[in-house]
Image 1 (cartoon, rainbow, N blue to C red):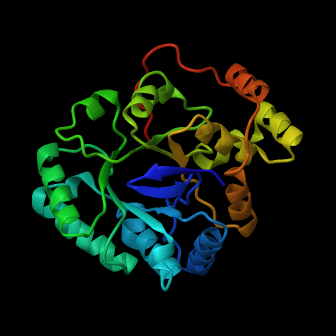
Image 2: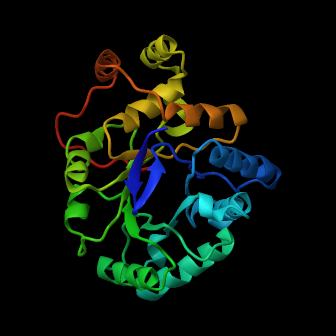
Length: 273
């Protein structure tokens, strides 16, 4: 597994996402087990949000990390409509309660809303001073949003990124790397794993004795400065995600991916799901 710095912590370049977890009570045991298996395999970065199942995903994470909180780097996100001075603090308290912890390593604004960023950041800083968060960041921010942040203390930006969604490579990703700003890639396998049947990824996977999903993850993180947060519940998928963190693609592999999924040649609107 390869590692990078995020919010002052060394984290694996492959983490664990929790979008759609916590929605079905009959799946909770499997979701908890998957997250625990991931931790055992070194996937110690876990990302969640108050939006996911309206707190349900955070409750799943809380069960998964019970008794092993010190092993994980925990990230969650606040709704934009809760991102006022008072709302951020109250939302964070609710998230901490659901997660069964007294602090987060990283707390993100889920996307930009109506509350002034100055208010949101003021609340983030208050939480940081109180030790309830280690650092704060943003999600779904494009380059102009990042450059317009009224503070340089932002620790990360979480955006959509996978081989078929490469818009950030034109400007946002190069800028982030130049700034030393970590990028967290959500939907690194595309929504519903739509990339996984692509023949080019399949051919590269066969050459490496891997799966198309692992090739997609390796492609996302190989350039540096990016951590991918795929969601997995099936044990075999968790194990494959963990193994993808050590996979290195060749220049020929990357060229083939470029041919199949061309890099952007002009500015594109930031993709969001």
